[in-house]
Image (tube, rainbow, N blue to C red):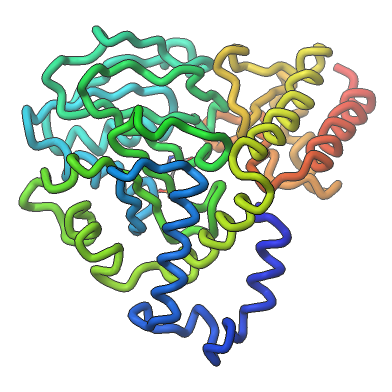
Length: 349
Ligand SMILES: *Cc1c(COP(=O)(O)O)cnc(C)c1O
């Protein structure tokens, strides 16, 4: 979902942006008016996320999946070793992609427990000479989130934050690189935001495609080639909107309140089961099952008909998943809980 005020503003400006005489979709990315749009988006994201001065924000393409390759291409060039924490589907894909490029190992995983919690790690979990450690902070499909930031000592920590970025404040200084595809919490698909500590720029493999090079992207202010202009514009509107409602502290309060309502209900009954261990629960993606595949199917179909959309779990895990990203209102979660109670009444096991 996107915040309604953001969609309304985009609608208002759709045909003619300001006095430019054209839509943002029609502008040259090199025009002064678009330059203001991209600079404002960068500045507002920086303020919102409290990004330190020695970090750059890059707008790239290729999605988070593109970063699965961009990260090793740009960073795996010291010892050629990288350590991956495999905590779910996307970190598994990132691991598999990175293995093409060097000595890449899985340092910790919770696969043996079907990813129902995040793996525990200590500094000793990682090879001291690794070029970086990679993690996925919020595991979208399994509905888990790290309740701690792994201690990697001096090794740069790289985090995929696609499904939790902007949901709460983060201490950026604990990370070397944070990346996120826009489409979960920031903007429509198209742009991938990369937040990178400056000293990590410029270490790339010579074969790195120019469009995936952090150095090239930074040197060209994310304008080496045509950026996903409209998606960046929307990202800017979302950042401005979040600042206007009090920033990420306020967003966190609302997200906690939404997640608590749903988890409290799940904990209060035994019709539905929440597979995730409480300490690893995601605030954005809440997974649950009835324990009966046919009932799960029926649940998703009837919920959809009742206006509660996208509740079917990912095709790889089944069950249900409520994605309650930033723009989902509290009332949306109330409606879901009411529906869950009604469904449980009407479909006794
Ligand atoms: C959705 C998602 C991805 C995949 O993003 P694309 O932009 O489609 O490549 C990767 N990582 C996480 C954590 C996600 O939630």
